[in-house]
Image 1 (cartoon, rainbow, N blue to C red):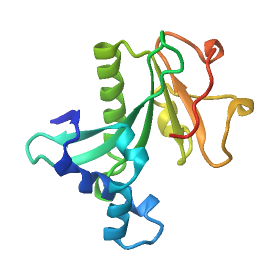
Image 2: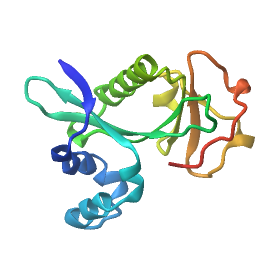
Image 3: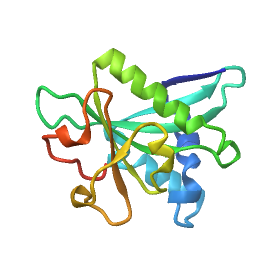
Length: 164
């Protein structure tokens, strides 16, 4: 069985290494971990993990950022979604995203979610994220996507967030 939980300090090296092959830019692993530990961006969000209950193995991770564009909206950004190489293509990232969204919808009444995809849109489209129209995209190499159970993209009346 898999559970979603907030990450603890002891989890962080394993979390950072989940994305090392993609974001490590061929630097030594210890330098990459140090860079992640010192990242102001990573300190601004709340990390979540999907954990195998029997073995306590972490099988996916992501970070959630507050993106409240106005005082009456609760909006979150989901980023740095990663899974260890040996656990990829098993649905763990999808499961973690679903669990995090469900948790934030229930616990915080959060209805609006953004993410930026550097891997294409297909994975996130299966989770009902929609690509923003090309005129609203801010970056060439990353696709901004939106999810809400209550609203469609046309009803977004606030500024699209920058890459987080």
